[in-house]
Length: 83
Image (tube, rainbow, N blue to C red):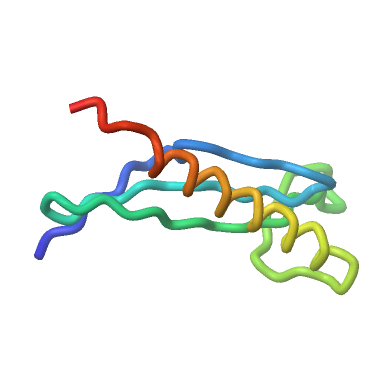
């Protein structure tokens, strides 16, 4: 079984320094979604960094964005096929 992943997300949702990215992967004829969540912050040296751990106050935002990602995926899956 071979799995291919595109390097670029098909959709990104951002709020308050949290980013959720949606990717679609294909295995054979099956397509499925994967979602990543990252916190984006500025380091002491001024450079931008990302982390995959979240603080207590980040969790409601992560929850909101993952819910929106889920809804976006469901809406896309409900669209008629373009084939």
